[in-house]
Amino acid sequence: MSIKVKLKTYGPAFIRCDGAGELSFGNEESNIRSQSPPLCSPAELLLYATGACIAKSILVAAKPKKVSVQPFTVVVSGESATDLPIRVGTVNIAVDGSFAEDLEQAASVLKAAKAICTVSNTLNAQMHLSLR
Image 1 (cartoon, rainbow, N blue to C red):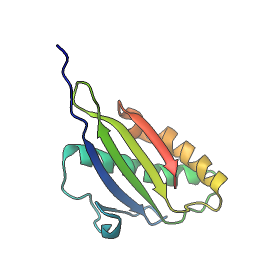
Image 2: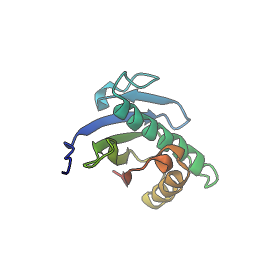
Image 3: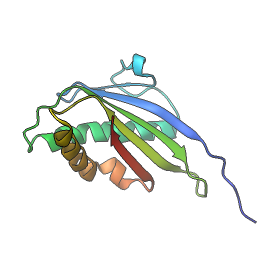
Image 4: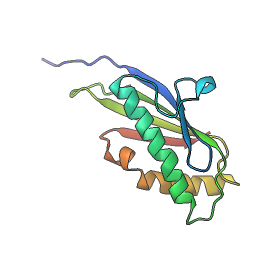
């Protein structure tokens, strides 16, 4: 007997970074105002933690590369796994905004940020990371 788990989507969670390290959170792009994530489900809180970690990691990764970081937004969504145990199986992370001077520079910083992001590196989920 196999058990089927219904696919569920989470998010999106929006995390805005001012470029200097100050983060703001919201559940809609037009409503990013709070200094802490909105009250939400544990799975959505996980998305906010992942996005905040990526945002902070971008700042850390940019410093040794001497990249001046401009304001940007991290948008995170997820899907449940289709097998047990119940968990978030896929996390989609998109960085909106030109946080670096050119696309090549931004891609290099983003790759380094993913490598040092403790939250995304800890999760047992597929990670899809992109620049928009």
